[in-house]
Length: 107
Image 1 (cartoon, rainbow, N blue to C red):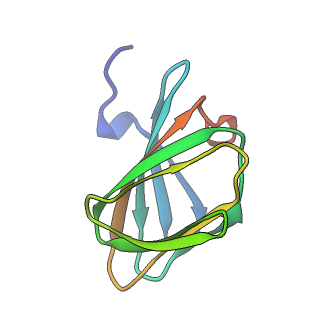
Image 2: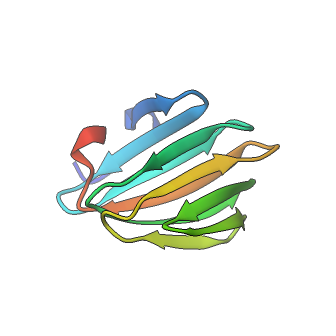
Image 3: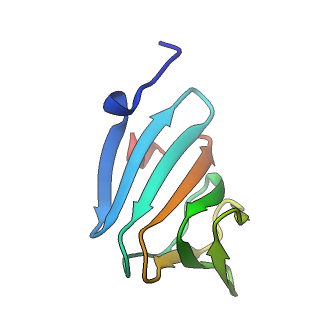
């Protein structure tokens, strides 16, 4: 199947207020992430390389020992096995993440 429509996305809520809508192929995964206000993803790491871009809202993102406020249009890269965390602020925040290779724990 070459096309995936929103009603076909695999939906996960790994943490309260964090909704993932996932689609993947053999070597890449896309995650449409919705953060409710004041929700967060705790510090973690994974072997996959991750890139992302903030579509709406803003969040505090920590990668390794560096923290930044990321807003609409800001992009980031998380190398594999580097600890990172993210938390939204006062508004709903939407982020598009990619993982390579796909995260098996999300499939």
